Length: 416
Image 1 (cartoon, rainbow, N blue to C red):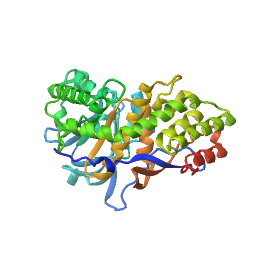
Image 2: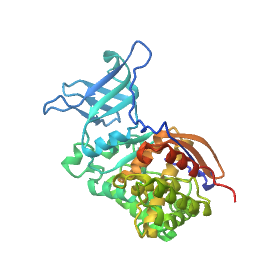
Image 3: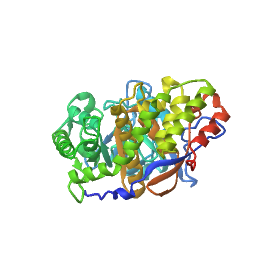
Image 4: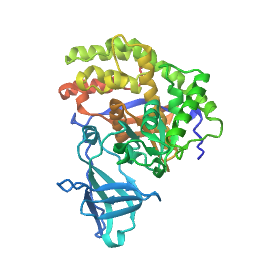
């Protein structure tokens, strides 16, 4: 499979963020499931646990179809489906090993003439997070067992390491993993090793020679673990393309790193309104000197000050510490660049399921908020203009004055 990535001039950054609060109420991440308006349509709920030790299962058949079997041996074989992205609340349930619901839409089922016409199928299931990873998809996230189906997956170092540890020659090495993901070739999956190559293993920008070495290393690991899974090819050599792409995003990563390292002294959590405002304004002053006001890293720096420290999304994504070394800044900014690449490719090619695989929970939460809640307001001058609604816990005490000040500080940069 060949895919022509957009030229570097067409890649847009998450910038010019316009943050909106809905009367400072917490963002509601729950989906409301409704049956279609047609009287013949209905919603089918399949519970994979019947209250006893007997459980149902979902499995991928050799022909790529998906079969759902309930504890009472009802089966539904899907030849076509779309899995709806999940909410952040369900991320917590998945992480904790609890039950949650998976919703299937756009369904074609072999048994449909006997079962009726369905607007949606909801499967109540519990999935162990054996790969310790999350799939970032358009609209939110999915567990790997669902997110990797028919997907083009951007693979970082952590995920390729897990694949090579858990699989060999397409098959799961352990019985535990085999009971959930037995054969990767059935997933109709394509791996893209661009993130592995560009991230490298030095916590800094790699040289071209290091990019070439990393691509060869990724290929060897994947060919050993999953030789039946395709690796994305490009019109030019993968090595040259990865290097060109890295050079294209380098200036923006460097600018963000400089901002974070200069502002880190002020990126500290506090519950005092006066100190929040003082630190927000100091951070924004630095953002203005680097023409980075309204950028995603500016937003994350600001909310790190006002969020509760023990659950701070900003702190988790930026990996803020004091002192704040360049290695941490590079890793944080590179992750954000991966999310930008995903947003760009999803906008350009909407016919495929593009995903990022990550083990980073704070990054998954951030991506979930952005991928679920953004409105695309246009792209110009290498910037992606987005509007998004934000959780109220970014503002202590749901303080309306702080909320307005945050909006003002994220507004377009003032002219000097």
